[in-house]
Length: 256
Ligand SMILES: [Mg+2]
Image (cartoon, rainbow, N blue to C red; front, side, top):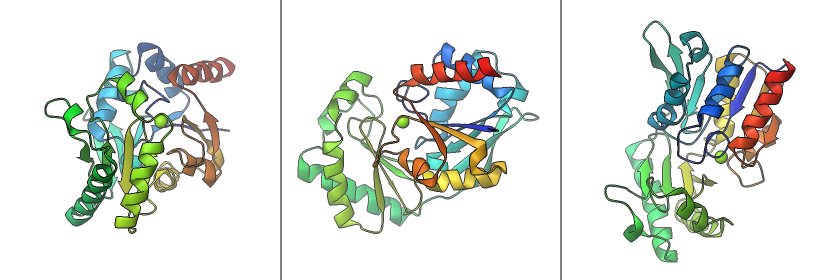
């Protein structure tokens, strides 16, 4: 019997980096009466709020339902749960990087991208940046955070550019881990802080075993950012996009 529905965010619940649709919000709200819903993603807390929580509230999620949302932010290196009495999110734990580690990751990815000619600063929107410090990970987004979805999809559909950057960055800083994520992103972390780290803490915090969790992700292939979850042995549903996730959730709700 599953107790927790766990979701990758980018592509699995939304069009990468955008708020979930009303249809997806309704499907998730339907799940929240029966299941714990636990999103886990490389994104920051603020983006979880904008992309997931605000649309859920707009679609009518109650305090009781929100209390069943458990957010595993920046690959689960930070965990937030809802405090209904304060109507706010409580940080339960955090594993943050040191300034020196952040600098090491930032420098390595910048150097690698520049060497390959993939440092495309001229394409950034004003105020946007390629490398972003997400506190417990450092993220390279080739075209920044604000670039349109279509240009992002077109930038590296076969992951070749990012794998080349990773190869050089790894040689420069073998003490860190680099992983392809999202549509134009590379996530740099300390070894072991991929989704395996997050899922291990998730089971501990939610007091559930592996077989009580069902995981949804779009990058479950080897090398993808959802693959560590598959490798651990979780039951996993691979989806192409959020529409497919919404369809599967309708099915789960219908059979309950
Ligand atoms: Mg994804």
